[in-house]
Image (cartoon, rainbow, N blue to C red; front, side):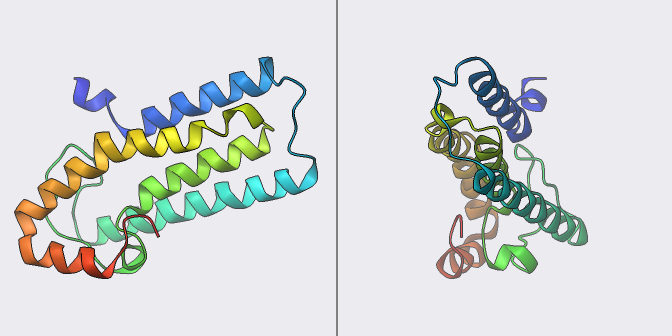
Length: 150
């Protein structure tokens, strides 16, 4: 049961709740300064959703799982995966960044690198270890050609 709760969307939701609470109840009078933050925030959220949608499309096309704790059936290196080994996690980070900006949650800015660190330690490193064991040389070549984030 814990495997089904310990998934990146839950971590993202937790980070978003903390961000929203900070913006709503503990703003300390700080602000990013207006319309540019709303606009940039919208762009970040939109980009994050696109990264996730393109990645899910590509994974579905190759009939492999997007669920982090499950064994991948295939190594996906096409589409959005040519630009990032972790486009869904990148999408999560972009959404968090966008909502920090949009909600004017200045004090939540440090939460972004903390979130990335948690995702990297809990999900990315174990996933890449499984892929490295299963796909060996193919995964090594993929890592040489494609960065983890962008």
